[in-house]
Amino acid sequence: MSGPALLLVEDEDGARRTLAEYLTRRGYDVYEAATAKEAMRLWDAHRADLVLLDLGLPDLDGVDVIRRIRREATTPIIILSARGDERDKIGGLEAGADDYLTKPFATDELNARIRAVLRRAGGPDADAAGCLRLGPIELDQVRREVTVASTPVRLTPREYELLKVLLSNQGRVLTKARLLRAVWGLAYAEESAYLHVYVNRLRRKLSAVSGVSLEGLIETEPGIGYRVADGDWLREVPPSGDA
Image (cartoon, rainbow, N blue to C red; front, side, top):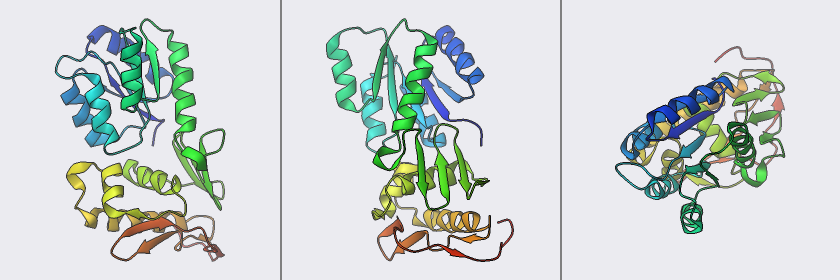
């Protein structure tokens, strides 16, 4: 995987391209949208790590985009808007945005805000650097990297998202529908077969490095969903090879 994925929603073509080029040079993987409709298509397809959103879109108000995303996920959202009225800021933040920058803004300030929001995205289980840890597992949300006992683990974007959601809710049962909405979107809320396949792939990949068996890491709650175990699930075994 590359760096954190950003969904940049901006209807002014020149401004969007300039900002996308800057963010790409800073190591982000940028998806661009000029309309709310295109933004939601890209959101459903890629599940970006963070959304940069202009409120003044040609087909829908940006606040409606925020509400749509918040029905499914806690993905960080930073509003980028020429609207300077306090009511617009409050409305966007109350709808679920995490931060607000009024145009024009310095790109380096935006980068600092992005990194700060990404560090906070893991919730109370993340450390000050934005890393989620459990036993030998570390998920770095800023670098978008996963390691087990310091050994890198290659995950697909969906596998990474699934692990991030699980590690952000350590010890808590997550229903199948909630996991499917968070990782795949509303259209997949009933596709529990997807979840079964991806959970098993995660178990195999995490167990296949450093001689550490993590088969008990993701517990199945029959008929309900899954949870990341908070008990004694670690045990040393010979390396099992690549998954």
